[in-house]
Image (cartoon, rainbow, N blue to C red; front, side, top):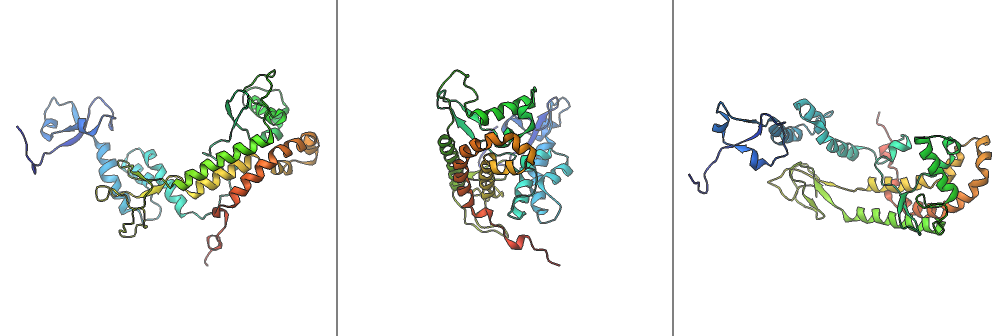
Length: 315
């Protein structure tokens, strides 16, 4: 029996009883008529996770957005669905409301997720991750060890030898010069700056995921100008910057951290400084030009300025 325009066809999104809810099969393949579910021998059941995550959770999240202490991840946990799918929304909202200063946390946690600095060997043309200069001053760099300590020792050997980590000892022409470090740091920093100025934005709706560089100047309710998804009214999501000024500043700061020999030396006590005194001058001269370049780029970023209103507390 056929159908014509304007006819209403009832359907329910289902999943097979022997399969997990939220199957990767397309929605069209999982749509079934309600009468088919009423059969005694039916192998289909209502996909509860689909309706909770796609129909109920988005509405509840928008209604509870102004309530302090709630987040998409917390609401998903209350509904009994996987909250990890909504963690990025919570982090984006917390970053938006947080003061524009880097938190006082450990360096490993502060630069978690930053892209590594990759150096290219002039001999074999292979690229490798540039280890932090702090590995040269670590106690494991002079120890005979295995596992993680052995890896730290190999990283320290790079700063001691300034050679490609992958080339054999008898290969010539694999020396990493200060000018090469400077040029490659500058090129990679320009890549991240270009990525920021692309201004890519993506809809935060799980189904939509609309990506664009154009601002939608439609204004609705209390939504910020330029954040309404262009697919409205079919989508009620909001556009989120994929690479914002905080990401750029953190990445450039990470490059500064990798090459900051002065900071590492100041952390050493007098006895330890005497141990590394012979190599300090060589390492400092090798990384100082690159450090000046990347620090100049980072200091041009206005994100490094602290707003006093973010530090004041009203009584």
